[in-house]
Amino acid sequence: MIISDVIYALGTIKKQTFDAWAEHDAACITYETDYGKAFISYCYENNKVLEILVKDNIRNKSYIWQEAGIEVIVSSDEEAVLRKLGVPTDSEDDILTKVHAILNNRYYDSRIVLNLTGWTPEMVENITAIAAKQGQSFDEYVEGLIIRACMELGVDINNDEKED
Image 1 (cartoon, one colour):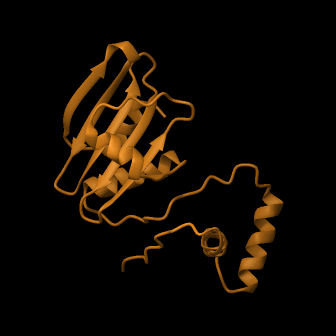
Image 2: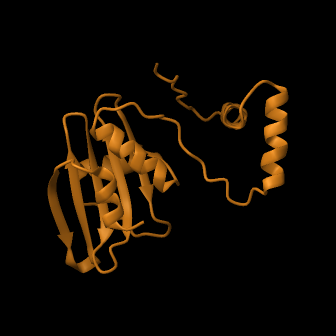
Image 3: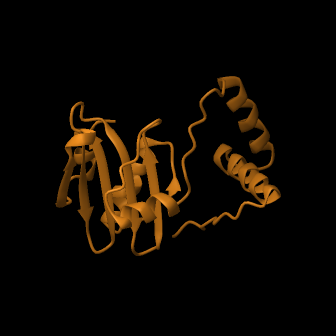
């Protein structure tokens, strides 16, 4: 993902601040509205986005997306807290959708999109068939499996219900 894609995805949201760290060839653009705040860190040599942090002030949630293998630059206490408490997501589309919705106070699905790399089409077809026999969609069935696995492992999860 490159920074121009993120700026385009955020549309007309006014950027608030811009910080740069020459020793790391990195910069951070901060977007803020009454509804939330987002920090977009990127390498200014190649414009590659390194990290996106977003805080939802209305729902009291935060999310984080990081490029694999990056060195994290802690630029503020607020960003450090978001890194620690933010729900990680692997999907670029998921984080961009959440950032845009949060900053504009729009509905978004608080569940995390999982990239199913390594799943063959046959595996997806088989799981879809099993789910259909139980009257569920693929997403509902896989989410249920993950929730049950987390519960068995003692992982505390927050399964928000969808808003109307």
